Length: 389
Image (tube, rainbow, N blue to C red):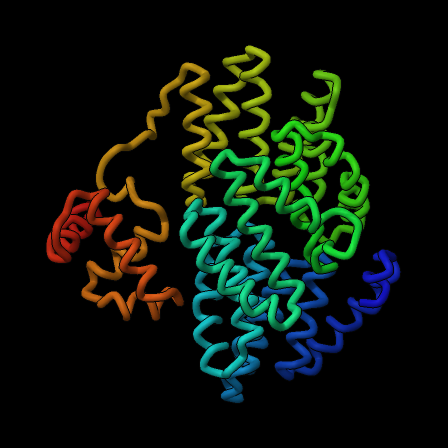
C-alpha cells in the first residue's frame, strides 16, 4: 500500500501477491478480506470475487455480521470492476442491510456508493442522487475518501449519460487532477476515462490531456482489465488527426474483446459512432451505434441506450428497438419497485428490500402509475403479470 501511495506500483506487486497466497492457506475471514483487497489492487477480479465469496461463507459460518457486511462490499466492488453491475447491486443491497444491522455506518456508506454507481449505469437519476447522498453524508462526517470518490463519480457518470458533460467535468476535475481534493488513491484512476470524455465533449480537451499520462501508467500496471481499452478511447477522443483517431477507436474496440463487459464496450462504440456520424460516414456510424445500443440494452443501461437511440435517429435510422408501451417505459429502479408491488409488498417492505427510504418508493410508484396509466396496485399487478408471460 505504501508503494501505491508513493505511485510506485511495480514495487507493490510482490507483497500484494504474498497477501493472496497466505490468505488462501489461512481461511480466516479477516485474512480473506485482505486478500480480496489485494486482488482488486492487482486487477485480478476473478481472485477478488473468489476471496470475497470465501470470506462471506466464513463470516456466515462464524455468525460474524461485521465481516459479512465487509465481504459483501468486496464482492459488490469486484462485480462492478468485472462489468457485472446487476450482480454488484444485489450484493450491495444485501450489504447495506447487513452493515446497518451490525452498526457499521462506514461500511453502509461504501455500499451506498456502489449502489449509486450501479444506478448510474442504469440511468436512474433519482436512485443515483439518493444513494450518493446517503454515502456522502457519512463519508464527509467520517472522512471516508473512497466512498466519497465513488459517490461523486456516480453522480458525474449520471450527468454524462444525460448529456451534461460540463457538469460531469466540473465534478470530476478535482477528483482526478493533482492537489488536495484528489480522490482516494485506489479508485480515483477509475474515474479518469469519464473525466476525459466529459472534458472533450464540454470543449475542454486541454484539461483532459493532463491526466491521460496517469491513465497510461495505470493501464501499464495492469490493475484494471478495462484500462487499456479506455486509454485507447481517451486518446481517440483527443486525437487531432482523423486517421489516428480512427485507428485508436478500432484498437479500443479490439481491446474490449479481451477485457469483456458490455457497458464499457458499448460506451466506446457510442463515441466511435458519434465521431463517424459527424464525418458523414453514416453507414459505418449506424453499425457502431447499433452495436452500442445492443450492448446498453443487454446490461440495462437505460439512459445510455436512450442517448444512442437519439444518435441513430440523427443518423437517419429509427431504431427497431424503440418501444413506447408497457413496462419498457420504466427505469430500472421503477421496474424493480413495480415488480415488488405486484408481488404484494407494501411500500415499506419495498423500501427495506431495496435499502431506500419509503418516500423514495412513494415517489417512484407515483411515476410508475403515471407512466403505465394504471390507478391501483391491482391494475399494476395485472399488467406486470400480463407482460411477464
